[in-house]
Amino acid sequence: MMTRQRLVITTLSVALAISAQTAALHAQAGQPADSSPSTMTECEGVDNCATWTFLGVQGNGQWRTGEVANLYFESVRLNADKSVDVVIHRADSTGSAAGLTAVYKGNWRDGRVGGEFTSSWPGHWKSKAGNWYAMTEAPLSLPNILHLCAHDHCLTYTWQDGHFTNYTNLPYQANEKRVLTVKSFTRDSIVFYDTEIGSYPLTATWTGRVSQENHNIADGTVVITSWGGKPTQNPVPAPFKLAWGAALELLPGSDEASGLDVRQTQPQTFTGEDALNFLYWMQFFKGMADLLGGNN
Image (cartoon, helix red, strand yellow):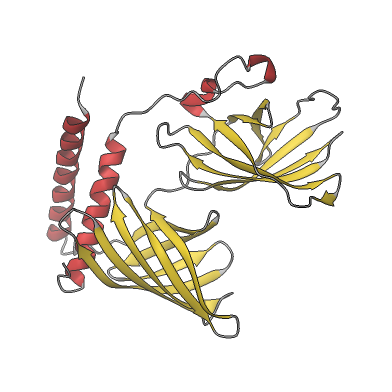
């Protein structure tokens, strides 16, 4: 069996060969190898995510909540321990937060970049700080079936009319219908808005992230935001676990099948996709450093 180290070396060698061939083709066509835009998903908090697109050191960001910003890499420093320090400036000239400016300081390590940002918005606040992170991957493909366990119950949800839906009647329930609306579905941000009708009408928000041990398992917390048509007072978050795809049967799909250990997960090996993601970030930040005049 190929070891993790050999897999990384082999995958990176293949990726580097492909990269070299791509650069050669660009050169033959008279095009610069770095002329293609680079896109990443950037998030602040849990579900406030944006698409950042860079062409060289300049870029733009578009948030789901309507903000539109100009972005600029101020500095990129490649460290001896193979991490990277970055400083990115943001200025919103249009969109719902026009006039807002921010500075994002972060560190890339082990395939992920993130850190802290400070922002100001005239007429709204002088200084506000928060955490941010970015990833290169697109949102995960939505599965057709989910197994979801919370509040001592396990249910199966199926994709129906643009939502995940379940009709299970638990004890003392009748005519139940549970609908999960997807707000985000990425490795770092899974957010569902829940609407339930029947004997116990309620609304809830499910917030979690994909497990590092298994790419088809997620866990997080659910908060019931209203009950019987009335907002809940001081709701207490409850833990949940979610499974789909190759890990679907690692969680029971109903209370009758709950003899399975819902905490059980199967660790996944380091994949070629992980190695390619690592290589992408290294090439991206190396290119930024070169454009900024060899920051190191």
